[in-house]
Amino acid sequence: MGEPDVSGVVLRAQQGDRAAIEALVRRFMRPAYLVALSVVRVPAEAEDLSQEAVAMAMQQLGQCREPARFAGWLLSNVRNRALNHLSAVKVRQRHADSVVLEEGVAADAERVVLRQQLLAALEVLSPQQREVVLLHDMESWTHPEIAASLGMSEVNSRQVLSVARKALRAKLAELENGVAAHG
Amino acid sequence: MDDERIDFSALDPSNHPRRWAALVQRTVDASIIAPPSAWGSLVRLRGAVLGLAALALLSWVPALTRDVQPSEEQTADPAFALMQYSHAGDMTALLETTNGY
Image (tube, rainbow over all chains, first blue to last red):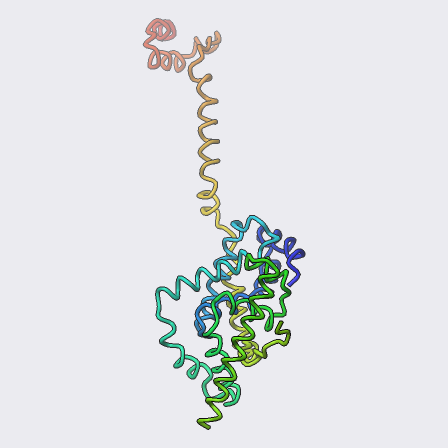
């Protein structure tokens, strides 16, 4: 992620530099998506929310008073928007249907099953555990980066990751066994 | 400690590259605000504009209230005398200048 060198890009973006704005969006779109996914657990919803939240945040970039903490500020915006969305809509009820619908016929069946299992397994985690494990294992963010962005200590980040992985593995094994038993 | 990463590749949005690229591009487009219009700039700077207008008005006050002594040429001018009459009710200046007519 390279948080320190983001400051210069943020400052340029705050002055209306389009290239800087685009660079920030491209750099932080995936983390934003993962944070939204951690909250709503529905990929299609997470896509819409991350798009809206990132665009809105970029338009209000002047409110980011500490450019060095841009990632934390942005992800906090995304998280809040996703939480507001979650409280307004009962996303969970649409969960199972949406996963099947968005995959359609194009994706291979194995990946669809894996995806469903991962989403189901993520349900056992808290939103914070989901953010940590997704940012670390999918985005390769380091613990200092996660700690700075999520407002926690590095030690806490490591602990959260360890607990989250353990719980995920247990749930995935359980789901795997369920599939094997039924299959 | 559990040091082995979980394989989340099935959840990776880049599995659908076109869809993801389109989403990122839409977000970029929505993030870049159009340059402000002239009216927008005026609205945004309305405080400064009002302040400057007030300053300009205030700078005129001494010129409007100060007692200006008319020059000889001006006092002989009927138009100036008429203006003095309408402004201060100074009938003498008006009579003096119109005597010749």
